[in-house]
Amino acid sequence: MMNHTMARSPMAITFSVWKAIFLREALERLFDMRAAWLWLVMEPLMHMGFYAFIYSVLRMRSVGGADVVIWIVVGMLGFFLFRRTADQVTHAVDSNQPLFAYRQVKPFDAAFMRAVLECFLMLIVSIIILAIAALLGYFAPPTDILLILVAFAGLWLFGLGYGLIASVAMRMIPEMKHILKILMLPLYIISGVIWPLHMIPQPYQGWLMINPIAHGVELVRDGFVYNYHVIPGTNLGYLYVWGSVSLFLGLLLYRRFDAQLVMK
Image (cartoon, one colour):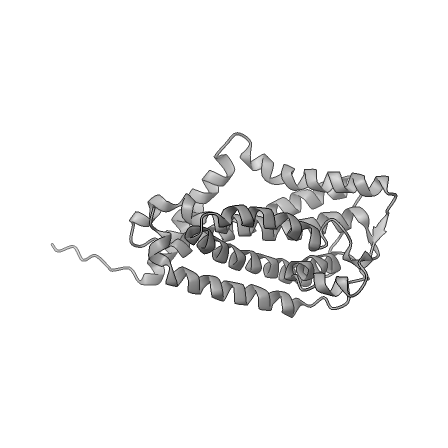
């Protein structure tokens, strides 16, 4: 009796690879060190708590018509989605070098699955943090869930594209890792996460709004707060243009430097 082995389609192989990488990354991300899962929540919470305290000392109660605590919480959740996605994708190739011994596994598979995992984890983290804020008396029922999801998706897309470009740059020029690490701090500041861009006069406010992350952060806040005073010029399409272009450029770089990415 002959055994006939059905050949799997390329799509089936790709999904199998993605599933295996996703499970591997999830286990490593959550259990790599003691209470690693707790740090996922504690890191943004500590940032939020610190800046909420600073604003309470300054006796600032609202920003753009939003309660200052809600303003900080939802803005920071948006930025952390971008930052964590970008960081995980940037280091995906180096962290998964052993997997590239299998010809079915490509560098993009590892990068993409890390981005998907980070999106999933940040969704859970966001729900937990918003629940904690509600228990503390800062309840913020979303006024436009669709806008929130689309804005989060735009920030995630830009984080993915940024990470792809950064990983290739870091692979080609190792010293780039120091520059990329330093770059995140000014992005944190100029994206309107911890300091209201409403208070920046023109033309400087317009210059800061060249940054697409600021648009995503503002739109997330707009989706949470009814009648939020969005910064003039905030545009969802602008965020998605940056996200799409960065993703396209990242894919081109991955294709062009595929051999160099898998070299140890």
